[in-house]
Length: 299
Image 1 (tube, one colour):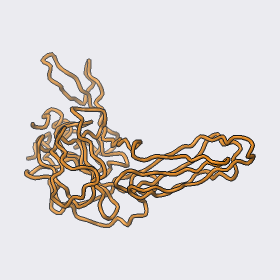
Image 2 (cartoon, rainbow, N blue to C red):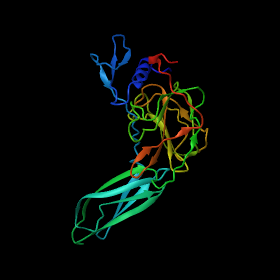
Image 3 (cartoon, rainbow, N blue to C red):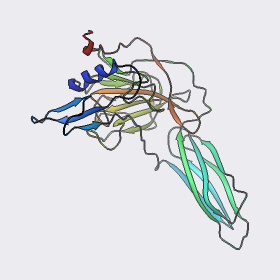
């Protein structure tokens, strides 16, 4: 399946513009039922929103547990993921509580649990009042992430970069600032660019789905960084959470799922920078050329 040419040419043309405000792209369906994209307001068109968020739902895998006994409440964080997580616990509406901290942060190892704190009543004859606020972030901020040159995460080609790091369309947020989009046909074999442990997979989305990342595979590397392969074909993921993979292990096939502007692989490397998951710069072990700017007549 080729890249949608109208959108691709528009993106390449906009890429030639000076850096500055993010360009506005409009999407509309013409009388023949063909979807079109333009940088000019058009009757019946809607603003096309570029978005490469990675909203991985971890609420069923990272838990806050409470144990109550004799006027005290003990809070324990349990992590069912195959990667460490950093958690933060704070409280609202405290009443009849002795010495509660404003907040507490801990790293919970993969498949582990840690007791965070115990709240005690000032007056044992009255109940404690509290509302816990629990947040969690993938990864260990204390990991010593080092330099590494990644193997190309696909088989075939040659393929080209359709949007690079700091791209003005969707690579603007902390989680995807240093991501690369590589244009390739749907069904291209996707392989592990670095060894590690599979942390999270999504394999059931069709089309745009409910997660902007589409189908994906997240792999934890030995130095604490994580590689994420996004917009994969529905039903193509062949690895499972907890599986150890080597460079070149088959992961899935490329697709066009989630908030994708056309068939491509979105590859990003991330780390926990301290209560936040952010992308970090990386390099492949061989050159990958950008797509030529057809709008300027370059081939």
